[in-house]
Amino acid sequence: MLRLTRLNGSELVVNAEIIELVEASPDTVVTLTTGRKLVVSEPVDEVVRRVIEYRRALRHRPKEETG
Image (cartoon, rainbow, N blue to C red; front, side, top):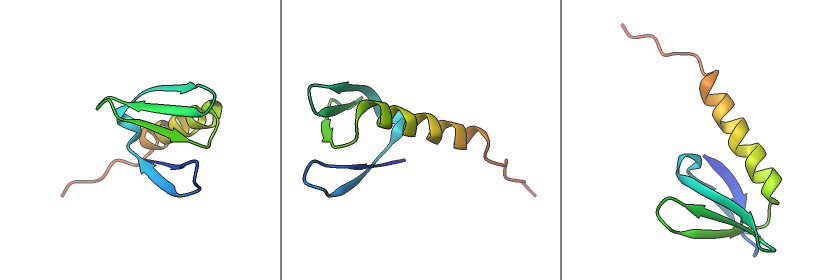
């Protein structure tokens, strides 16, 4: 999940797995696979960095032991 900020300053949490497109037009618009569009204050490069960080964290998460 990614914490992002709307233009009005309110925070939202987005499921990184359903992000389809991130574009600057001139504000950053995040398009989800559902078709919903979110306008956020973070620049495109920051959103991309956070998605990469999220995916790295998932990959390096210790596997749960089953008993």
